[in-house]
Length: 525
Image (cartoon, rainbow, N blue to C red; front, side, top):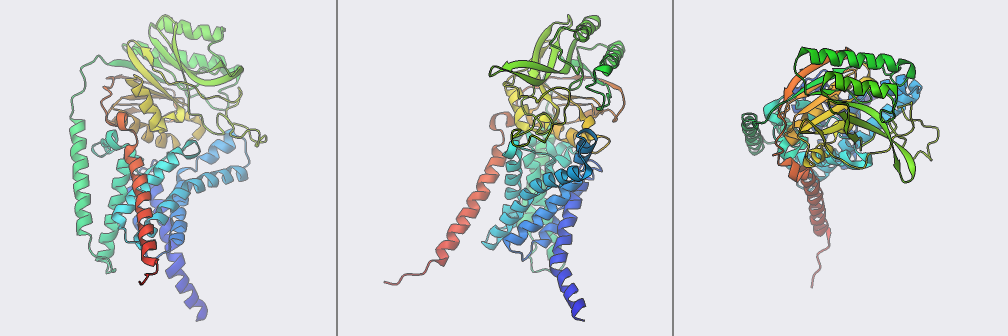
């Protein structure tokens, strides 16, 4: 009898809250690619919010952490594929790294829950504080420790075009704020209808309706705004499907060039093309060196009579030392190098090892050359009079890089990537979802050439016009209209997210100050 009573109390208290927090994490993970059940994002936080009722701030942090850890463990499972298959790490080590990354990102979920409960105890309404705190935490994780803004809640809605158009004002953070606000309102409605001591949120519901109506009105307005009357750029995107395990092997260099040359000739034969684009590291050797392989690429551009952009490592002198760069080269139709764009935001442990002197036993994943160094400048490459802003691999997840490219003159964004690292997982689709927001934020079309997929063409409204399957040789042809660089986000950047973070901090400080004033003993004369 005593044992059953103990278990009953445990489940109705701690275990009940734990299961609700876990459920929220599962729902969040399911809302992203794959399986892309995006409507779940609008209700995913309701179990967590129920779990946070009557909790202390410390307990709220734990529950928020559990939700975040569950969500990211589900979203980032592909990390083990990268670490074991290509990093040659034991499963135990790769699993520990997967859990560590998930735990780091979960800290921000926990911090949001802590701030929300602390604020509620001091009289601040969740309908105000929860969206502000959530966006503020998202902004922090996008900048701390080089930043990792992977799969924010707003990214799950990448296919709902009328909704995501406000990204040219607020970035993805505006969509995230709406989703969190909706979750809080739906939670309060549910609890009011089920007899909890929570009043029906009439004012909050009205606020949500107004916010959604304004968002969709703006979205349809932007979608119906005429495009600038400028000549389109005809592109051919080449997906070579080169296996990662042989990509850097000199023995397969000739076969790799044969594949890209053959697919490029097929593309040009199918219709007029202004620019052929190969993926990241499509030329797995130092193109800038005079070699038969380099000459072959130059000759291909001359034979096809088109501009050619492709990924290849480069070497330069920095601080009197040789530095290796992850780069993209642009050739004109005569095979002349028009310019080079270098990757500025490198992948920790993928392209370089942070604190390498303290971690001599850790090796980066990209073999074949030494550690990469970051590029030192962002400048467009000119292809037939159209300035191209090149984003290499996961640079496409950082909005500030796309914004810098467009502010420096780029009118078409080009994302060249090698997602073979991810295997047959959901990661390439998650990567694509985030890249779509870069087009909307900057009102600049984005074309994406991926080694094993997903290769795609995205217009300036975030509409994905075509997608290739994974692990197939493929050619994608299309026309894109260069962007007009008229997005407010280009000028104000992440002001919305920064404002959410600042207001959250201000609310908590003011509430703390008021509480302290109440606790001061009253002095009598």
